[in-house]
Length: 296
Image (cartoon, rainbow, N blue to C red; front, side, top):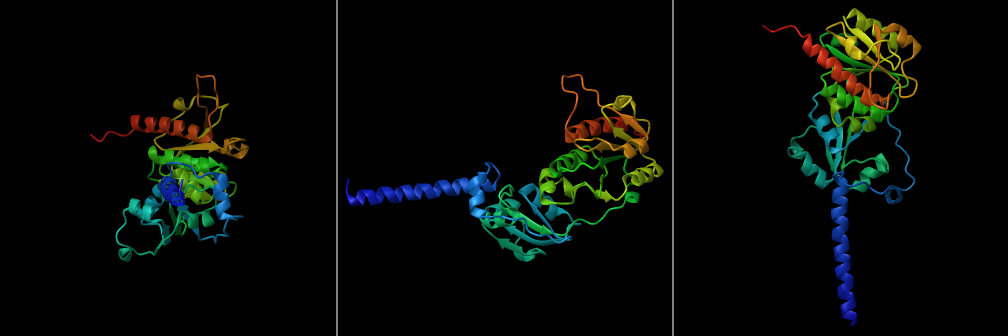
């Protein structure tokens, strides 16, 4: 084989390798394939989470960011996006937008979000959503309350179910509950922008306030005295779920109007809190629909 043949073969191999990398990187931006943790960690080096200010939130992922951009209550600081992701967001011309856009590479976003974030080539710096108060929820017939559910992935999944079943708000404690974050928002896949996320200081006091607003509060407990379906007695329901490990705290159990269980006929008798929330929301919504006042 001649020297020229070797050069031609090397050039072709390099060309095809570049094409493969381009296709692979584009698929990773779209979230179609994961980024291998080891190689990604090598690219970002010894990554440390940035020190965020109390009024600073980073959101990421195409669905999450698109929902945030469409939310009029969301104050946007800056959008960092790859050329490929920008095309998918289908935004107006940058000059017509009230916030700056920075074109970046996926690696630039990795350096801020870290090696494990599936950001799909888009990151949004924003302010937290406005604080909401319980008294604003008196017209909503269905609420979901979490008693120290700590995992932001679970809270995000619960938030998504709450929006799907028409809940008016997701209420949590300020302590031992996740604050608004990119991880929670990504797990919620846009639902964070569609439902008030209310954090209160004292759960027992908040439950009493809900009672004053006409809500029947029902705590989900595996040892509850009756099935959830037979526990509903009101036309305004607040479901209360406990933490992943300990369940409802004693004070919460004493404060809710009723305790109920989810009866499961199968071999497995317990559910992850996010799955339990979805089942409970379905049952509550079915009750509310059956007992809704006639429009006739």
